[in-house]
Structures are given as structure tokens and as C-alpha cells.
Amino acid sequence: MRALVTTHAPWKPLCIGAVITGDDHMRLYFRSPERDRTYGVDVLTSRTGPGLLGALVSPAFLANEHLHQPSDDPHCDTVVDLTDH
Image 1: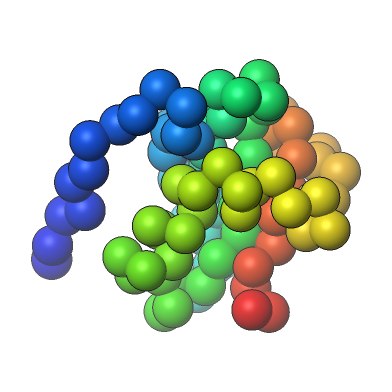
Image 2: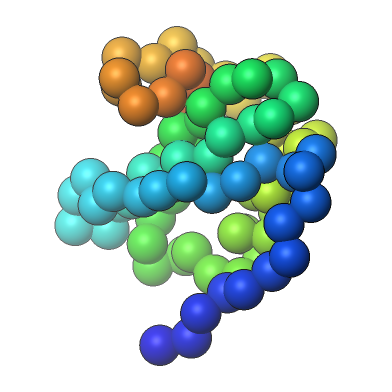
């Protein structure tokens, strides 16, 4: 297993946690300092790697409101479902 380590910039979203939600599903939690919002990003664990994680810490990616869904998760304000992408 390898770790993804990066230097955090104060304007970039910060990964603050993750939870396994199914056999091949995981929700990653990101805090956006620009929007004062927490995002829950649903991904398939079989397709999660450094490329996807690098894209998710882009402020522009999480700002794409076409991907946003209302959240009933008490740990995030908005859900982004990437399980079909």
C-alpha cells in the first residue's frame, strides 16, 4: 500500500475523512475553505487512485455545481456522486 502525501495550500480543499459505504463504495469528505462547505464525494474504491484524489483537491472540481446533490449526511453539506464516472 502506498500513501499519497502532499503539501496543503490554504486555498485548496482538504480531505478530512473517509468512510466505507458498501462493497466497492466509499465516501470521501473534503472541507472547502473558499466556500465554507464540506463535500461528501462518493467513489468506487476499485477506481480510486492518485489521479482521482489529485483532481478532487482542485477547487474548480468541487465548485462544479452540476455535480452537486442535496445531502442527508450529517457530516457534509453537499454530495458529489462519482460512482458513474
